[in-house]
Image (cartoon, rainbow, N blue to C red; front, side, top):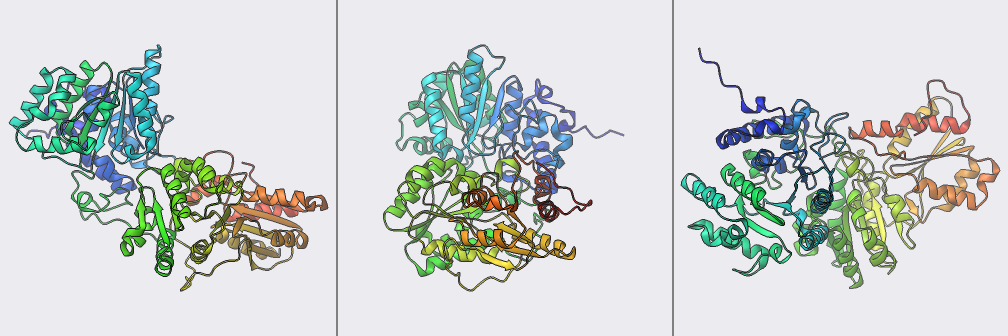
Length: 636
């Protein structure tokens, strides 16, 4: 009886095991690797479509180059699942994005094969150039290869790096993973023809004559690709004008083409080379290929049906609440427009775009431009809502300061994914926006305590024309409160009392209001009278409310889903300035600790951060001087 052959993937412990494998075996390995990625992500959830699109490219790169001596840098890193499997992490791949598991992105502390961590886009070429300079200055490093997607290359930072790399003229490889434009798959004799061409032609001649040498329909595809890059047929590409040798387009799912081009480039390159590789996002999994988002980010799913797991709550997601509230306001005010940086679905602006497509602007992965563009819209008299995740808004901070705040322009910043976000981990945490916005003169900064408050804040921002205004809200489902039919315009700088008590005040800023309510119930059960207040505004502070809480309670505990230096710090500053701390007021500020919180579920991350309801109870008891052995205040 003949035993079934051992799967090729089972024989791969690391990239060295790919060396010397026949090209046909590498193609078989790619098929098995794709199946493994689908199987693993069905269990963990994650960025499936982008990883499926680079399976063949990942195999080819590891077969040709010698990592970790050669530095393979994946832009964003959300397409690195095949890379992780091939670099000794297959046995842990089903811990992806879970507590104490593998990161969903590249991470230097995780493997020598991840030379540069990433999760924000458009950093790879800059980092690769840094490694190339290090190599040329005697550091123990080999070739540097940056793999950057067509979306990531829309950011200005990528072009800054291309310009610098081209002028430096150092040996460097940039793989442009273009998954917006696929080409017909060359098979049989076609593939052999191209392999022969690349094997025999000097690199610069191969690049220059690539388009003319292609037979039949592929010549048209190459011509369109060149026009896509230059706007004119027959001219040098933008990349060539920047000093790169341009090769492409290459079919990113044809192992023969990929191997031939990469081998030729590695053998002959002297300066910077850009290889234009066309792929299909979600390749090889029909449900991903057919989906509008190509299964960019998925929950756990059934491999056979493609059905994704649904959330456990019936409450709507904050993002959806925002999108619907914004659309409702836009229906009443034609001056309202929206700006997003490549995340229309993720920010909820796609909801408005369906009804008002001419009033929603997706600027691509270009947060700096998006912020200043919104400033220009505001200066023109429109009412722009600039909807960007907290972690990505950091990238446009100079523009927020210089182009918005300094000019007192009424840009409305809708800040999604505020606080800790779960499986995406520290790179995507919305930890710093309270501090970096509330310190800017003239800024109004709000945070929604629940989804109904978010509706009110959208209405408040729409009605506010006196300067920049921002409101933050978390990822995921709300707490299930009843939504108002129409948002109420809030009084600027006024919070609200949620529950009245006499001994300790819990002053919440943002979506941890629900945890404060739970903490209040636990304290009341111990006979402690509690006031719960929702600050609503970090700037301007409701100083009347804060001073009232300070006067009428023995202790005040502030709670926020942000880093130190934010809301609690502003409350302390005001109380100190008014001399209220001199009267023996006991106050505790509960914030995220001064460290990055590693990936886990949001609940686990907040537990790690010391921000659960139990931690709030412990902080209140500590402030009151009440000894409760079952509680211990954790000093982060």
